[in-house]
Image 1 (tube, helix red, strand yellow):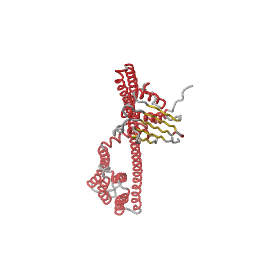
Image 2 (image 1 turned 180 degrees about the vertical axis):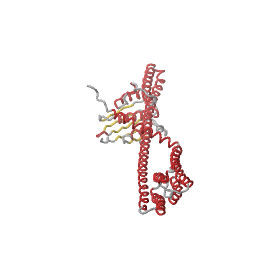
Image 3 (image 1 turned 90 degrees about the vertical axis):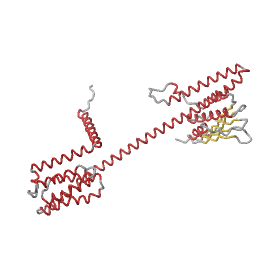
Image 4 (image 1 turned 30 degrees about the vertical axis):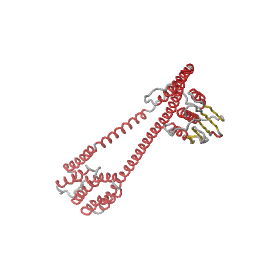
Length: 420
């Protein structure tokens, strides 16, 4: 069975249309860059046509008076054609320049056909100027017709000449208004397309900035927590080295494991920031984000760093990944702050409660022996926790525990999930 072939004329029509559009766009672009070139060619064409009409005597076939001096006809021909040169920049001035020549043309009876070029000026004036000017422009163009009818007319030539002028001006004005309307509509569409493109670019930049901010928060949480754990393990290993070399070796092993985990997570995040194109992400990029199922591993790392921590989890509602990541990072940041600031002998407790409807309450407390320093809530940790919480409409409170208790308390509440 032979494949169906499209009609040759269908294939040829589209390339021809595209070619015409391409040539038209190129001509318009050239005209925008060098408008004087087209204006000179257009004006020179009509000046040449008027001079040919003068030399050949063709003007006598429509003249009311054949005795009009040739010099006057030459002056009228130039006066009605040369003003076409500034027709696009100054159409009103060009039209006013031609009016005296049109009146002399009608009074003397030369009746040169080149006077109809005033309609070109009417077209450009309607295209660029206020439409209310058409009233007195029509009066200006009708005056030579009245003069010609009064001086050289016969019988019913009044209505014929004036009606012809009014009809010509009306048709030219209608064409100009149509072109002007289409041009304005095209400009509106182009402006709208440009605005939409700008808004799209802004949305892309905002999305990229939000993603980079998210990655920055992840990097802060990962590096800050793991460095705090490593610091605690190193301090513990240094104290244990003199009395228990085995405990020191265990601390060094834990430091190595924590460091490798931190480097792996850091590489995964940095790969996202790469600007070079590649066919696909490496396997490390596909590692899932931490969730509440990884909470035990997090607490074990904190305990190895020397901070006794207990956890209480009430309820077993499964949460979306985003909420789990928020809870995990808040617990991680709170315990990291405890490692940094609580001092020796401190303990911590994590209380996580799943409520009905998907709401969650989290409280992380520590039992520092001294009051927390004033600078403790500074830096990026607390703002990062608040930003994560606000993404789900939650609230977060962080501050010293009520007197007489010493230590620090972080309390987070995520409300019920909104129905889709």
